Image (cartoon, rainbow, N blue to C red; front, side):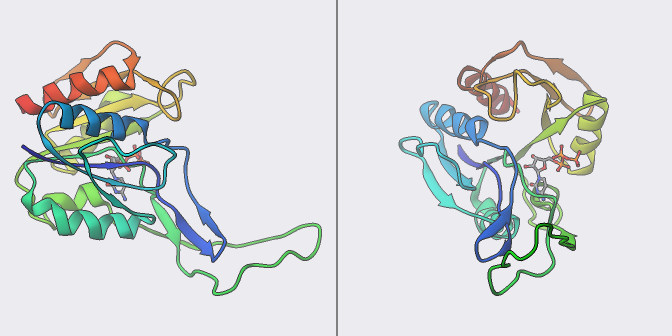
Length: 210
Ligand code: CTP
């Protein structure tokens, strides 16, 4: 099958030298890309900047901002059977980007950054982009994990949301380990903690069945 995977953080520019980003390492998305490729699928990885090597045999589109990600997904998703959205997309981006680098002056700086909502790429997959294949999202939660993830699953037209509890320091962001709950519209299933690489194979098997 043809599989699209988004991964990593996005960068939202403030001025030519600076940006807003988040703690995503890209490890989960890259592990999914590697697992899907090894299981015989044709994989396209669309990723924000990470320090990871691109898995062998995987097609790759680099992106920086949430808007870059939106455009790349929009142009590619039509030919896909499965789309897995593991990227940690910025929810907001600066309304204006300074043309010149913001210079330092006094001992304190008061900076007002006005941000606007980014486009929800996963949320646009069904209705805006017309995607008919299997759609899988991630949810980073700190409370009411299952309930919040189920809301996202229904709202965004997903077949499955892979939910993780980001309040735990030992798993998730930046870690090589993860513990996730599979949340469907009508049921859920907790998987035991495991390495992201091992978990990725299990997740690809589950998604194939969908
Ligand atoms: N996502 C996306 N485009 C965005 C924001 C999120 O594609 N602009 C995707 C992510 O890749 C992930 C899922 O949507 O698969 C996460 O949904 P989101 O509603 O952003 O949830 P959280 O990141 O968990 O944040 P919040 O609870 O604040 O909504």
